[in-house]
Length: 55
Image 1 (cartoon, rainbow, N blue to C red):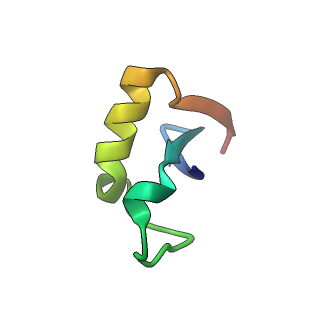
Image 2 (image 1 turned 45 degrees about the horizontal axis):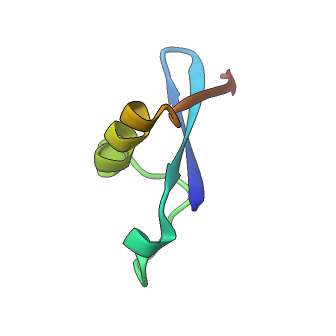
């Protein structure tokens, strides 16, 4: 997995993105959270969407 971190409401959250899903796509240091909503939802269901710090 690779991990993305998002800032929301003065809190940072981290969630995994499976490399199998990414394959040969370009990965950017910054993206809009909506781009990763599929993975955010999966992480919420799996309990892997975690608080990683304060902004």
